[in-house]
Length: 367
Image (cartoon, rainbow, N blue to C red):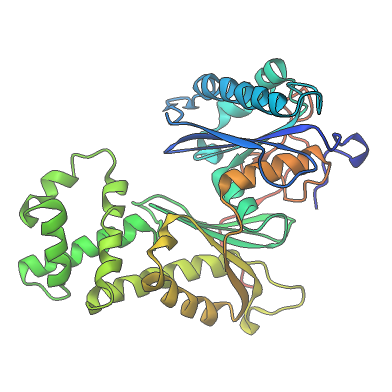
């Protein structure tokens, strides 16, 4: 278990903390206090942070984050004058899509820049799956499945991280929105051709959403956002599942993939053998699960089969909540989630060296 920094050096309960969630829809920032639950205020920068040949653009992130942070600090000091020194930020946590593989510039440039601009004493840079975990589960052992256009499962026993899938729509993301949408489109085109496994109901939805089926390749293949276009058809599959066995079968397959990923990362209680079934907490987070019972019902069945002792629940909070929780724990000297050079990076104060590291296992555990 990580406790960093030492509790004796922890920030006071009135100090400010900042949480940041950077994703495809933009940059969200939340301001809170060490000793108070939840955010004092939040703001949204609608432009997504750019990614280039050098990875995530640290300068572009700072150009959005710093004005947003100062605005939140000014609003907080106006609302409660004299309650805490204006601009005193004890800790800041940033969760970003692509942090694990594209975050080198953030890890090298942000610690010094944020210390100079905001006086940040402690900083955490996390993959978005980690902030999703912190928002969904907190600092307890367990697993989270984050489902949207893609799908990733992340679990920890508070010693190391275990990851399954999240490899993108060409290599994985099995059971995610793009996977479901593509399977639905495949079934529609099979019906169009008269091949086995086709779904006339889904073919009708293709025509309603995209136009003539034979024009679909020309609409889809030139798009740079193909995963999102594929995922846009997933709700149509869910809408047809109640009356169409092919659509229902697609969602059952998706549920099986999602449950397998959760089982691969869910920590086992000490002394539990693999054949006895794993336990723990599994939280579901992300827009994928807003499809409701057509997906959730078979998913619960699959999780009950693979993880008979697991407690399955909806996420307690989103990735922005998770970023603020990590920031608050870091400021209070009570960060228990395992650190890692790319998944959850905490530089030394006023430096950029990794203080503590653990491993991330991509393979399922077998005993």
